[in-house]
Amino acid sequence: MITKLKSVALGLSLTLASGSVLAATEWSVSLWSKRRAFTEHVEKLAELVSEKTNGEFKLNISYGGLSKNKENLDGIAIGAFEMAQFCSFYHKDKNPSITVTELPFSKNLSLQDISDISLKIYQHPIVKKDLARWDATLLMPSPLPQYNIIGVGDTPESLAEFKGRRLRGPGGITNVMSKLGAVKTGVAANEVRQALDAGVIDTVAFAPHAHMAFGSIQVGKWATTNLNLGTGECPVVVNTLALESLKPEFHKALMDSVPEALEYYINNYENNVVGKYEALLEEKGITKVNFSKEQTLELQALSEDVRQQWIKDNSKRFKAKELFEYMQSLVSEKHMESRVAEYKQISAF
Image 1 (cartoon, one colour):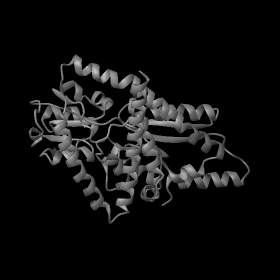
Image 2 (image 1 turned 30 degrees about the vertical axis):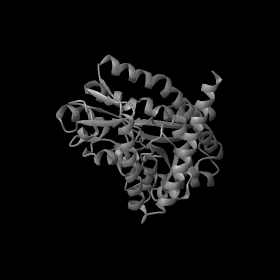
Image 3 (image 1 turned 180 degrees about the horizontal axis):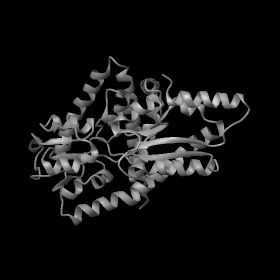
Image 4 (image 1 turned 90 degrees about the horizontal axis):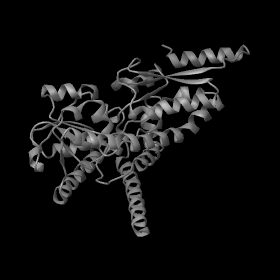
């Protein structure tokens, strides 16, 4: 069966052979839910690409009209659309390599740091080979701050009180918290509010924008502030054949627009999302849970177990230790750069 993209490529070849070239190129982009901080880089990318090509290359963005969020990678693979966003923890067996970025490294990194790290991980041969199974090329990350937990029920005063609480979140966080007795529970992002109301889950780990977008902040009674057990990896991906079939000027417009789109995204998130989230916590009287130094050290110890288990679980699929050590070196490098920058800032005063 000829896929949509192969049909397009064949049609283009015939058109070129006849001496007539279609001026405009339109890509379908599969997102989900609604426009929010999490999708602003895709919106900006579409705007920039259209501007740079005088409207001849268009990214037509759909929020849920093309595919379910957990099926976006499958859609890319069969050529149902040319670009999509997905989260690696939706189907870690389909993209095991990039889950390395979700591991709990217990480091406080900026959005720019997280973005830079993901872009380098995307270029690693192991990751490129992994995604090639889906005819997919990773285009840009959706950098998110360290996730924190919002929960209903009694405010936990000790780590032991997480035992038995049903938690929705990415692998790095849920794997650490499960060692404390929390129960990993799979719930789609857009069903979180309903799941909390119905008692299906007690706690949810999200980045700030998602706590607001999916309603957990509306019903939460308490929220952690310094969990620092990682974040979610939700890249924007393109079909490789579609990318390779682009006219050179369109390909350049797309790739050159990625840094601009990410810069816009990061500035928007830092300036418009984080502050609003903190204000809502205060407005709704949500109790803030700050982990002590001793509790943080215990979480870090559990994190090491999770990291080593990740290596063990993936060693038969690819050179997991090599990819892990590369990721660890990137995190350490960025963390050190941040510490140096902070020291210089303090010294300036």
